[in-house]
Amino acid sequence: MDLLSSYIEALETAPARLYDQEQQEVHSGLVTRAGREVITALGAPDLWCVEHGAHVGRTLVEVRIYLEWMALQDPSVYRSYQTYGAGKAKLYARITDELAKDWNSPEVEKAIEELDKLSHNDDVLDHRVVDTRDSFAEGKSIRAMAKECGLLDLYRQSYSLASGVAHSEWWSLETHCMEPCRNILHRGHLIPSLTLSGGADVALASSWVSQLYALIRRSLQILRTNQDAVDQAFSWLSTDSASAESFAPGEEQAQDDMRKSED
Image (cartoon, rainbow, N blue to C red; front, side):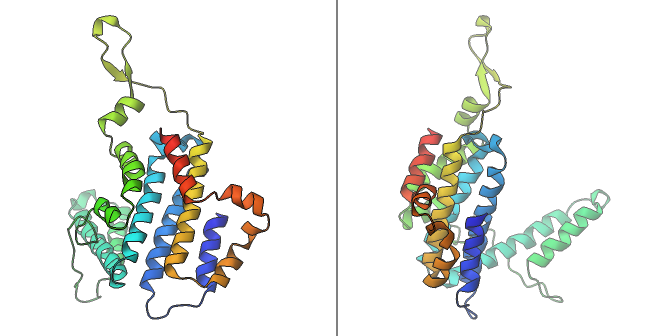
């Protein structure tokens, strides 16, 4: 929480960009989304394992790829990202509205209204275009984005493995959810396991914090946030250089820690 708060402080105390706020809005939204994921997971040690915490590492890598890839594009890409998301909100509202009316509870009706608002439609004329391609990058996959911005190894070694768990690929089910039947007459077939993953992997949880810190620093670099504002916001890390170095070992070390934990 201190890291995320300092990130927001740096952005808020640096000189504001009044006419091109989309880049900072997208950066701060994505980094905050990743930070909230890490903060919540740290409060639940049962999630500190590959099976139950795959979504945390996946989010951190995904956000990093998005930020690096968008930094190589024309600045209009940030508005495209927002427009694509607003269109998806409109699409979700229309899909939800297809439910039979007698199924709709007041909560569902409220959700539809909220999604309509998020699409930023005009009060009179609904002019929002819905882009049904697979991504905001004209349908480009996140793997292609990673390759273009030099993060293909990070995608292959971290994101794809975490996605395999999140999408229930068979190797993940076999590893985490199944066990051999003990009846020798059943030819060693696999049966569901009721033994839950242990969690509490401190090295994995620490790697999430380190990755979040690296993501925050990289975002501030891409945004060219005023260095004085950054130094002031993160001054608490430099009060004890030894402990700060131990707390934030750097991006490469963070990735190594994560991969070892996944192995």
